[in-house]
Length: 255
Image (tube, rainbow, N blue to C red; front, side):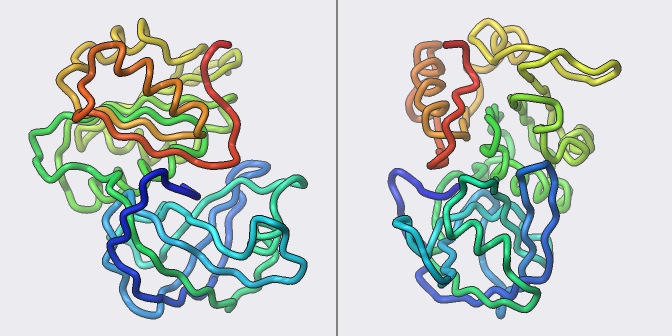
């Protein structure tokens, strides 16, 4: 994420992350790899504040919160974000970084994490960029050889916008069932559905949703709409968690 509604800082220690390389995973989505100066004791799904001083900073400034997309089981610490011509000066400076650039990173925080109880069943709903904390969670589950009953419902505009699909499909053996929904006609052989995640779709694809802890992650407008929908479907407040991303406008619902 890049901002949380109710931040609860867990660790204010300054870390220094050295940029090693980036991957372009869609036409406008980038995956950045860093090496921390010391191990960072984070939990899958948490986020940190990244500081990047740069020339001609715009009004949004020189720091951002980002979900740690990597798992605590991985050597690198990674973040992912969309960058295009309309992006902020911060994101453009991020894209222009050279190998060896060091960033100050702090404020490790966030409670958008998988519950400790292995018997807790979970429903993860993601829209677009909101898939990033789930990548961290599911990679951790795979690497740690945990078995969790998790249903993942992931919606995006197109099939090319679906990130980390190979990883999620691989997690089936660990108890993760992944379903994909896109707003376009599906290519031949692509295992997903055309359309939006609606109450009818949730009831069809995850009929025991009322027995699950429900997480929703995505653009702020999408999360607000889904929160109302999920609670109206009978999910209790204490079984619902939300995580939203600023400056993304998609709702992944019919207007």
